[in-house]
Image (cartoon, rainbow, N blue to C red; front, side, top):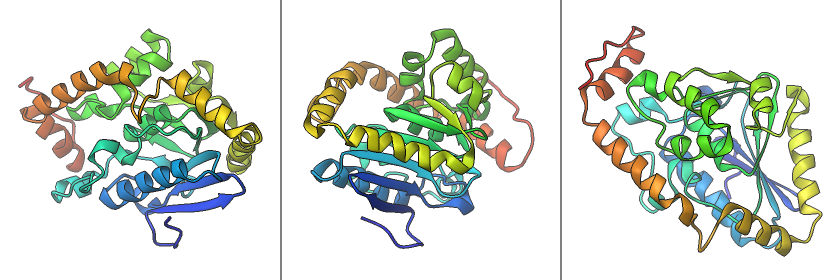
Length: 265
């Protein structure tokens, strides 16, 4: 497991809990290929290690939990999923269900893929400063890393659809009110709260906890069959959308700091 200061993911054991931190604060913890490889590997090793009973996922710094995909890496033609990580999905996590419970400790902004990481977690604790959103439609894209699959399942449908269709963010208090997170705490006590929850889980019988998660989340043989059709639809739509003029215009307008000019084609 990666634990050097310059690693894209930092991994620290705390008894039976694994603390995993996205470690690209200079890029708002945006996801690139090396981060995907490291994070997916950390989750896989946690799953295989009988001494690990819960995982806490957070971001380095106090500004951003995860800003989603690294657009600069994409612009350079880099893949976000290195060979061998494709089946794990975005960040090595969103299509990589593990039996060990995962607690997201959201320390700042969680936009796009950042919110999709929260949706992939079992539980979430947010700092008071945290914000959540799926801004993809403002960039000519869709939330194809689980946002469209899971947000309507985890929030009241009309609340989810407002986030999906407007791209507007919500604050931590709103996320708590609608059940996107379990608790909201001061940023200085975020990790203490998240680790406390993880240790509470880890104090229980590990095999019973893992079996309970598999049944509750519908995990079977390392996948979630009930989500298969929705993922297939999401994949078809993003493939078709990426060839559109609007999909090119959105990121370009963002890079040029101007309003996009949509053509609907």
